[in-house]
Length: 161
Image (cartoon, helix red, strand yellow):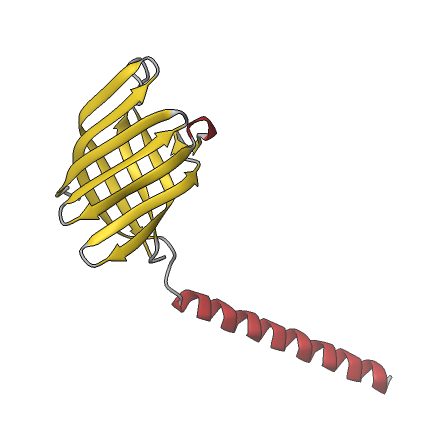
């Protein structure tokens, strides 16, 4: 009987200490900074896509560079992108673009990245050969969406929140 009481008390002590440990871990997590976008910079410029059906030039295209708390990576959103003359315009997000800071010029590159469009991955338009730079208020980059060579050149704009 004494052994049963001893084991029951030991079990209760273990449960209480585990519960206390979980509570402490939850408190630590609340104090950690959230992972995500910490700054967004908008640009307006010209998007040019050299599709097999012809060149699609879209002036006044807006993009955003979304800086994250991961200092060496950004995502780039292209709003109402048109990659072919007969293709409908759509918003495209290019995730995991490498950011390399060098003085006043930031290099942006990506060997390969699956873009997001219409709420899901768009593997048919996998981004390759992404290379560009941000300098002062200007941005320019080139890439391939699938087999479509595409480029963008633009200037920083202020967007009301």
